[in-house]
Amino acid sequence: HGALRAAGGPAPVGGGARGPPGRRVSPGWLRWAPHGRSQPPRRGGRFDRLYTRAVRTRLASQLSELMAGSPLRHGPYRRYYLGSVAAALGYTMQGTVAAWLMATITPSALMVALVQTASTLPSVVFGLVAGSLADIVDRRRVIVFTQYALAGGTAALGVAVLLDVVGPAVLLAVTFVIGAAFAFYIPPAGAIVNDLVTRADLARAVTLGAVAFNLARAIGPALAGALIAYAGSGSALLV
Image (cartoon, rainbow, N blue to C red; front, side, top):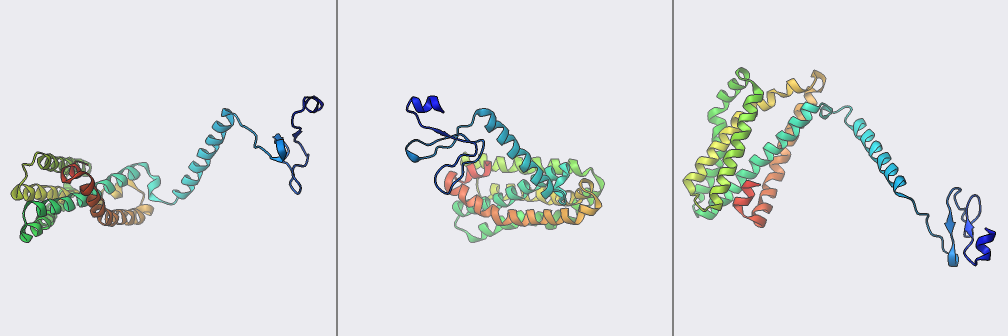
């Protein structure tokens, strides 16, 4: 301290010393007070790493406590749930893009209405067959196959739109195929939940699935509209 005063530098304030009036400087903090202003101490990279690690550990602990009573604590169900949300979101977005695309191709209101018919009719036609198939064939294989069909049909339609080779008939046919794939996806996707969670978590898992599908139905059309306005129908389908 004496050397600093002799050199004309500011006097350090630390330990139990007092800073500005009415304020006590915390012990262990070294503060310099030139011109009556306090400056915070500088901490090194090691402190930042330790602090970041402590924050991550705390967040992980809170997340574990939050998920302790949720079916999402089961890894297989969590991956399935995220995939089902993405599938429902993609299906609702495809339906919105297809309806808008038909409206730009032809001014006929009937053709625009047929898009919704082509999307929902497979559930009526193939509903019983899809339910029986989910009880006979391996459910995981059916889910994987239908997801490939959904992705392939949507991507093919997007490429056709970008190449400007799509017409009303092609659009209705592809929409029907996508609707059929989704119709065969729904029964095994609902039945496989029983294999991914315990019996105690089954009711909550089914409820989460219903919430995810309804949420996708609410968000999907809005998201599809934003993508159409930003990138066009073809790019929206590919996304």
